[in-house]
Image (cartoon, rainbow, N blue to C red; front, side):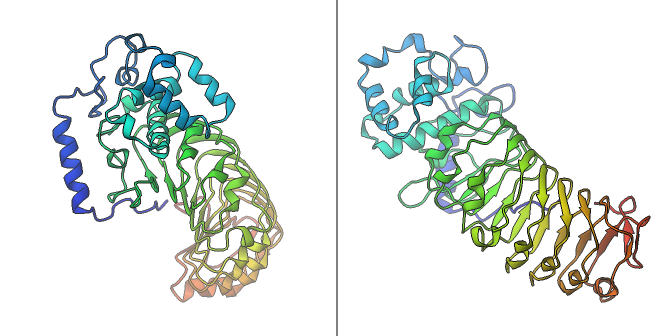
Length: 385
């Protein structure tokens, strides 16, 4: 299925920064997976995994209770971390401890303000939890460069003028692990893209911490469990792609008031259930809706024929019943309509829908031909969907 654009023009100063990073990393080692390692601890052989070796040996550091740098870091982190996470600092070998120890040995730590400490710590924990030492690419991560200059697929500076992280985009890069709570320290993010990796577990129920989120793209991972209800609360959400995971839950009936600006919703290949809300038809900007390969029930509402920009409506492989509403023929920009592998009543598709294909607008329509008569439709087995 089409994926979000990941290539955009790169600012010249960013290229200079990346060039400086490459020059600074020439003396650093490279892991077996090909990741360019910039950490000063890249040759630390006192611990096991590739990722572990990028963090300082705790045995070579002074106790945090007697280290002024450590005190500064904890003063910055304590107000924003929940008690159960703070307790992890008392356990050796946790990513929280590794990130703190790496941060307190860093350059210019005494000059960092609390906000910078939190952001840099969150990125370090993320690298650790996602087994960053085995990423396909990890240029400049855990280096002395500003975390805004660490490897990403944004192409532009992912931070704003105040050096606050606004975009996190690391796709197709071998990320493996569970999402750390610390990511929600990055409260200024408006894009959160971690597609095509091997992330697993449940999503923390803390998405309300992202105040500006308008793009959430995490398909083709191994997430499971209940889809966080906070995700449905973003009025600026434009692009929502959580396809090909194992999420459960339902779509809220008032989604039109919660996400009035939604344009793309890729929810396919999950375990979502319940009825398809009628109010989806009130989303005037919606043009790509993929709900296939889930467990949605009930009838297709005629209101799904209302969004004037709808070009893709994928509803196949669910538990839908009743009749296919003729109002779908009002979608005069529709290019793709899939209805096969459902439990619709025996019926004949209204010619109003086939007129879209006869007018060379609709490229593909699929139904279960054993129960539905449609002169312009292919069967599910015949389609490429």
